[in-house]
Amino acid sequence: MTYGVSMGPEADPERWRSERRLFRRGPDTSFRKLQSIKFLLTRDRAAVGRFLRARYPLGLGVRDRLSLVRSFIGVTNAVRGYHTLAELLTVSDRVLRLAGRPGLTVVEAGAGSGSSTAKLSLVTEIAGGRLIVFDTFRGIPENDEQHHLLDGRPLRFARGAFRGRLGAVRRRVARHGAIGVCEFRKGLFEETLPQFDSLVDVALLDVDLLSSTRTCLRHLHPRLRTGGRIFSQDGHLRATHELLADEAFWRGFVGHEPPRIHGLDEAKLLEIEASPPGRVDA
Ligand SMILES: C[S@@+](CC[C@H](N)C(=O)[O-])C[C@H]1O[C@@H](n2cnc3c(N)ncnc32)[C@H](O)[C@@H]1O
Image 1 (cartoon, rainbow, N blue to C red):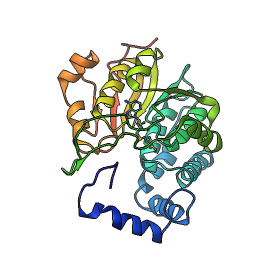
Image 2 (cartoon, helix red, strand yellow; image 1 turned 180 degrees about the vertical axis):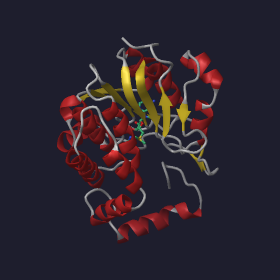
Image 3 (tube, rainbow, N blue to C red; image 1 turned 30 degrees about the horizontal axis):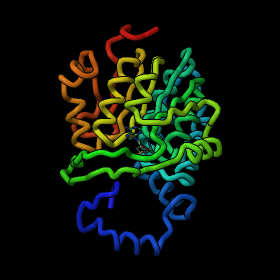
Image 4 (spheres, rainbow, N blue to C red; image 1 turned 90 degrees about the vertical axis):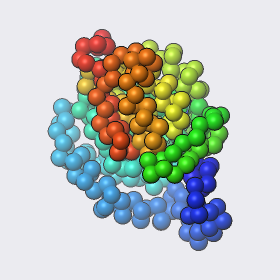
């Protein structure tokens, strides 16, 4: 069972339940901590290396970077999340490249239980910015979208999936992140984003529904400052790649020429550049 939808024999709910009884796997378990160490030494190792070697305008030392990585892993161990360490370090890298910029604004669309929010808040604080977090805080909204993963398996997102209540997310960020830099905007993106009138430096979208990605890009991409990026973590869905590759979507719905996009047709984390320099800078 993934995201409320059965996708094949390996997704048999009974098998999943009995395996869960044998091992406790959720937040604050030994299993979770061992998994984090395993991923650090394998899947995420190259990204950690790149992060430790990168150059940033604020000259963040190796000890501070290691401390940030350690904090990220601490959050992963304590709060349910739906991203990899490598993905969050890629986004953090962009935030730190823009550190010290006046009015630095980081946006998160799709907070889930608050794991990515806590991590983004930590890096935003180091960079001297603020983090604006958009979500229903009631999980995935009602929808009739039918999706396919890149390998063709079908998938749907059930209403209420990934629910993290606003109060619980705030408490987790207060405990594991930097709540002082966060502002929360509760409601459907379709209602909250049109009221958002700030320029944006970095945005992380993790929203699953295509309708949500469309809304986020329409309202956030034209606000992106030079050197800024929008990252989408929904590259596991075929529809996300098709949407981003659609020139008519950019010209007709977002309202400008298609930007440069890294990772089209292959990556889970897609990186969308700002429009040509000078368009939106204040
Ligand atoms: C996969 S979860 C985010 C997980 C989180 N980024 C993490 O890595 O732990 C997707 C989130 O998008 C939110 N979401 C999706 N569509 C939305 C919409 N139209 N308006 C507001 N929130 C939406 C859901 O409420 C859910 O919290």
